Image (cartoon, rainbow, N blue to C red; front, side):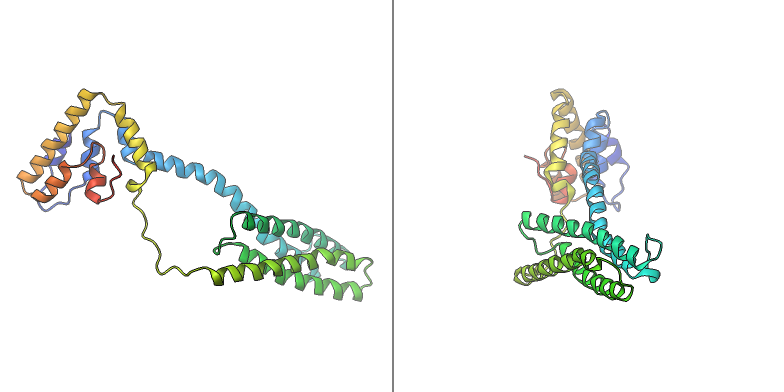
Length: 261
């Protein structure tokens, strides 16, 4: 509990780091210090990352599959996985576009299930399925006729299906975007101290501190604030504002973002 000592080192021309002052008061309680640093928020963000990475991989597959398919069907100018025969290229591209068709259907179903939001990555994946599916079907037809590839028409069906599904959802997403109200301005980024994810761990950790220690910490902070006011490091108005802060929410109070009860 060294908030008073920390405050004594501050000069009148220095800004007060209220967060450091508050953590100094709780230096004997590492759990509280960790909560004041927002460690709980960071752990929550890490957990979110675990779910974001697989989702990002899924979207990468959705976007990459049509590109792989068109690169395969164009033959020697592409990235074919076959022995460079027209029949092998068309067959492989048909299989790839079958996978792309499943991907775009899944993506479209997710979009519908989440309430058809206007801001969606489906616009990009539907566009790629529509454009690259049509292009691949045209190339497959040209090469199939030119090289007399048996059943080339059968392998173009997944490409045409991607074109149809992509076109339908491209139109639907564009209609939703046109109907959605435009945002006048982007909302200001919320201070993390003004979130329940920050306030909850702080309150829980302080609740584990005994009443006697809490009283000592309050006295330490009160003395520190008196010291700063007496040496004119802060104004009387700021001092009154600081004294009104709930225990553990001094920094939040002075930044104007306290959620303390």
